[in-house]
Image (cartoon, rainbow, N blue to C red; front, top):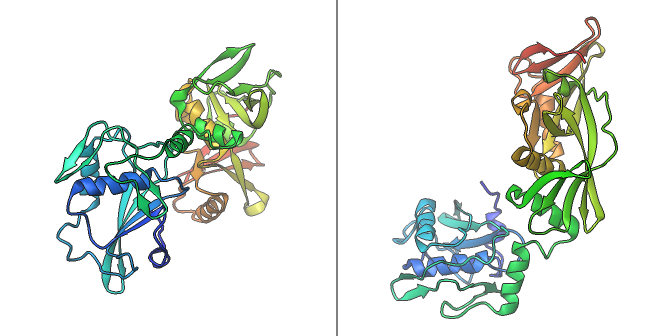
Amino acid sequence: MHDVDIESLIQQRESNSLDFKREFHSDNSSLVHDIMCLANADVSGNRFLVFGVDDSLTVIGVERDEHRKDQAKIITTLRNARFYELPSITLQTYTVRGHEIDVLIIEDRALKPYVLTHDYRCGKKTVRAGVAYTREGDTNTPINSTASLIQIERMFKQRFHLDLPAKDRMLALLDDSSGWSYGEDESCLTFHHKFQTDFVMQEKDDERARDFNDPWVKVFPDAKASTSVFVLRCRGTKLDSVSVAWCDGARLVQVLPETYYHEGVNDQNISSYYLIRGSLKHRVQMLFNALHPQDSIHHIKDVIAEFDSKAQAKDALRKDILNNESNTFCFFEFDKTSRHFFMTKKSKRIKLNRD
């Protein structure tokens, strides 16, 4: 569910990303046209089609609107319109000043231009196939016209991330594993982007370091692990790097996760491991999981948690470790008496392999 400040939203003027409607459309062609214009608009962030508010920002409400649609009906309408790529939408209802307002949220995705594969006609209006409509300020491209060549050029730049700096472009490319291939390049494991060939992720040719002993690698049958570094480059220029561990006899490659430390009882240091969704580390790991053989991935299931932010991770892990009855996440500790590492997973304490 999207977090929308509805009071702030309905006090704004119409723009590239915001369109007010007194009521729902009486014909689906107009609805499809308005959604397409907002989806193709040259603006960052989500876009909003607000029903139940007129152009003067007066709240009318849609509770008695005979043309009111729920999210499922709007999605069905978009599917029937036969988009080449379907916009991602969410419909949320808010109560404001005693009235219900429906807000259609159109996600900002790099799939522009959104166009139809066939003409779509409902009533007297036709949304034409192959035509890119957009929105300039508070005005939509007329349904019998098209976006300008300059506007369409911007859409394709966004689609292929050509409007981004090289580092951000690399991050965006990592999200699409189908665009990558890998192989041995001068004895180094190298990932190449198939279409934007300037972008490469290559393992450094140094010998892999031995004796990597973080507790989480001991969950594998072969507890020995080595580390190496992958360098991300564009046209030979280094953009960033990511350290990885080769686990279980190189049967799995895992990006080195973030570490959370908790001071345990009786001087026992307790640790847990996690990745931040959308971070470089997380995107690289998703690429490994999609393309590289990960034969031992079942051993690490749930061992490395995922969160939306570092603050969320620290808060959730701190609370979880204090909940002795039912732990959600995995925690590791070294027992000084037995000289063994132990993992607590879902309140079950498991003795781990030695090196």
